[in-house]
Image 1 (spheres, rainbow, N blue to C red):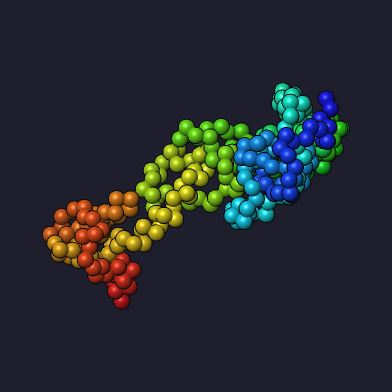
Image 2: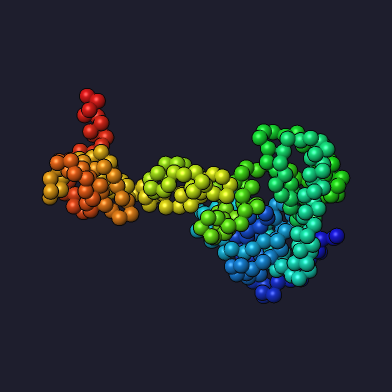
Length: 294
């Protein structure tokens, strides 16, 4: 099975001045900045020369200064042409052969008794290399495996150790929300997520409900965290003493989105008030703690 010729069908768009586009490519949805003398639009499927070789990609947008700011060290390359029918047929054959590729890799791993778990394989359209993605608890000496795979596939071999989030990016499809998982759809990097974010947003702390397909905390917990933090700073914190038209009260809890406070009155009743009912914050929680320590 031979790869399509690189200098194939030219784009239908008329040639113009050199432009740069953000292109998503590869199994891990890598973002790159690709140059071309032809015009492309969002969603156009193209064949690009990346830092890995010749492979298909999807045009996302023009590489504007705003787009550059949203990316961290994007790879460079160039768009060769639009994806044509010959390319699509060849990619379909690669997809059909992927199960056999995986089986061949597994045989090589088993014969060497290596402590690694194969996740996926990837062939480039131009045939320049064959990539194997795997999980492992530590470092793996796969030098002999590379030699065995090179003999099997007759091309350059790249073994890439990944984490559980990248595994989900390669294999998972939809999240609990019913939408395609974020890491495989639009995220170019995995945002840091912590339990603090879940607690601030009053999300359930049940691990089975706040964990994504990768088993880690859901990336979407990060999206609105900054907004929640800003709102929380504007409201009196739990433990603070506030003055309202009904007298002094102590804040028990915040309802950030509703802009409400659960407070304890001087006669030990618990009621819910609007943050607008607070006339003055008499003592913040930190001030109260300092006074108590003295």
